[in-house]
Amino acid sequence: MVMEQFSGERVVSSLPALIILAPFVASIIVFFLTRYRVKLGEYFTIGTIALMFVAIFSLYDTVKAGNVIFSRFEFFSIPFPIYFRMDSLSFFLCLLIAFLWLIASIHSIGYMAKEHAHERYYSFLLIALAGCMGTVFAGDLLGLFVFFEIMALSSYVLIAHEEHPYAMFAGAKYLFMSVGAGLAIFFGMMITYHLAGTLTLDGFGLIQEVSTLSLAAFIGYLLGFGVKAGIFPVHIWLPDAHPAAPSPVSALLSGVMIKVGAYGLIRVFYQVYGFEYLHALGWDQIALVLSTITILLGSALALLQDDLKKRLAYSSIAQIGYIVLGISLLSERAFTGALYHIFSHAFMKGCLFLIAGALIVKAGERRISYLGGIGRKMPITMIAFTICSLSMVGIPPFNGFISKWQLSLGALDIGQPFYVGLLILSSLLNSAYYFPIVVTAFFGTPKAEEEAAASREDTAAPEPAPSSNSQKNNLKLSEAPLSMLIPISILAVGCVLFVLLPQNWPLDLAKIIVQELFVSF
Image (cartoon, rainbow, N blue to C red; front, side, top):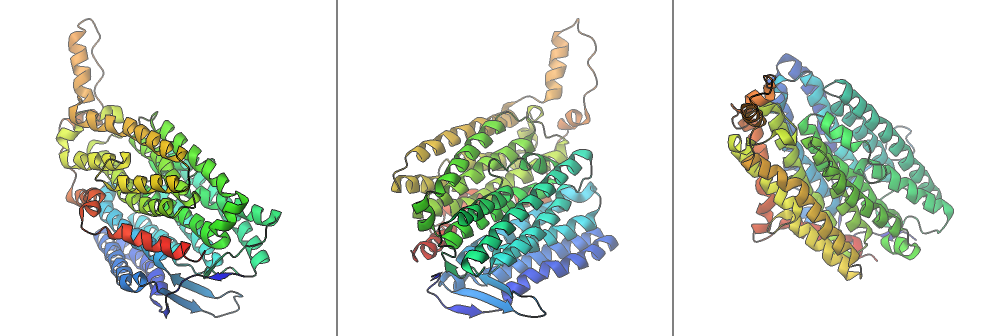
């Protein structure tokens, strides 16, 4: 018997469907507006996303009261109805998605100023947003699968946007793996329907039969959603896609889209199977092992990267390991930590990728070894980088500390101190690959000056080759434009603001979600 999910009321509303439909319609309008005048398309994109954010936020009181908002549409000869629903988990993620999308869209004004194909970029930015929203709002696994594929296909266009060979390679790699992920999810979904006779997400424990088929479905879901999340061993698209994509897209890939994969795992762990079922069979250990490897591998490989965006990409792999760890520990406080880390990581890593974009635009440089002294030229940008780095390491009073604290308490609640040690080790590795960037930026010497000093000391040396444009420009650098600096500053302030407020509402909402998912067992 499938257990009912929520004790609150079921509120019928078409608003979730309208929120998903809006970016699809807006993408068509933006395409033609941008072709006529780029600024009109940019402002229309920002306005559309801002209205979506307001519409979602207006449902806060309804969702906080424990109610579920849903809309159901039956038409044509489709054997399954189109079913949208918003519970506290959907609300939490959709609000975060809309906010970060809004920030990235504002940042795109400065980043895309000298780029090409603006109409394609902003149109697919909205389509990808609709895919993310639809995935999170879907009331059944079929809808989740369809919108998941829309998100994957539109993301490919954004990753390959710059069209140079590396971008095309990274985009193709992402696309092929996303297609494989979709097939794995579809495989699990077919088995779920065979065993449970339904695909709806209104209850808990859809699969209660213990069989080879149920295990096969679990592996399919783990691999399928794991590809999008970027967990080991299906993470290999991520280190290429992030450096290849425009930086606002990288911020969305890391800050939002990989979290959609984690969202799928949450629905599978806590609703398709139920955490008691997984714990009894020991299948949670599979995910725990993968999350441990993901954390260590991502952190270790990040240390080796000189390309800033590639270092951030490997860091994202490690950070998604925290979230999968919190989901897989099957502990209330660990799950609270996982949810809060979804929120805090969106702010931290979203900001860091936007900063990388500002450095590329202003300095024409992304190599860490060539960023010496840039903090003195772009102080606000690099102060924001420092704040995000402190939060990533998990130093109080930043958001990253709260999520790691909850994860550690959750591990101790179930008698697993090993994972506390893992989190401490990972924090040390985080400091090893973030703090040197900060030190180099504020106390290092620009590469051009180092080479000039070396040539003066070595009088017998031949005349040095001319400096690159990025090295010459480093001496004339100024702060990033406001269209880039304001989004960066907002996210950086957000890394500490919620901890200092009298009420940390993202943490409170995470606890409400946990209570709803655990109370039924």
